[in-house]
Image 1 (cartoon, rainbow, N blue to C red):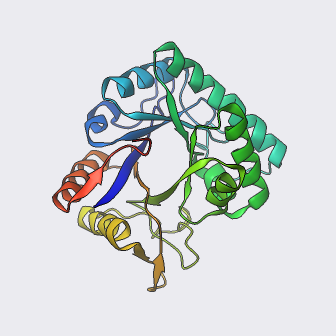
Image 2 (cartoon, rainbow, N blue to C red; image 1 turned 90 degrees about the horizontal axis):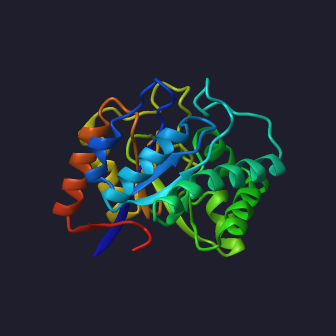
Length: 253
């Protein structure tokens, strides 16, 4: 039987600004990537998000990003590998404190936005991020774009890794995600998104924007919590996966 984890980027509210439908989407996912204060989130949001995730038995992950609240961490920054290491250690530590204080265990780390995409292509950045995760806790699972430099770096240093695929994003021929700056980066049709997920999970294939199939490994599927149809996507994808005899469970199980 095929098995897959469903993860969602969450805890991205900040102060009086609210983002996503976290409470409604929790019953449909198995892992939550919680913002750690750099690209989004704040201490109160982090604590509340941890409590909610624990109530639902969801695997909790740190979602470290670039220090760019205004750009939501989606703008590239010229950082060094040492910068990346320090940022990731700092942010894991912040969430780790909340998880431990609430009696939970941190499951994974998944970089956010531009940091994630930069690391997917840069071996040096990926090695720094993987080292940061390993030195904080070598039992943590590192999430990275399927087949990317980040996953390779995690495996090289001895971390357990999870190859991640995306429900609502289109792919390029080299296996990278279509940049958000392009009009065709996002999939907004629910049926198209669901069929892409099913094919990635069951066949290990996805059709690129150039029209050719590429091989892909789907250990965990990302459902973006800030999308206009996030809740509908989550319900539909979870339901169809289970109907298709795919076991949906957290990567740590």
